[in-house]
Image (tube, rainbow, N blue to C red; front, side, top):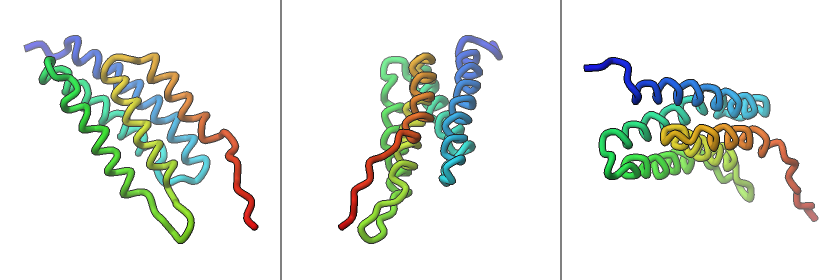
Length: 137
């Protein structure tokens, strides 16, 4: 039994990229005082990447079977974060950032590193785009 092979190499590369992208997104979120920060994003991206690699290697004929459950699972996690207080909704962007992070982890797991890097940069830039606020009255 070989200890380090192509799957393990992909895992190490994926984990390093997951940590880097999670760090970038997490720093942006923490700098704005959001609850889901560095460690949360690293874990979501890394976990999604691991599930995706396992999915590809456990059942190569159905690579999306396990990976598709990531979308539902993270969606369920995000739904638990969203709070409605009166007329306002809180944590919607936090839930979306975790769902987006899971997609980045899946991209890394499937070997789409360039897509994950560009997507990670976008995830750090998008929340900084000024929003248009409705005037009350």
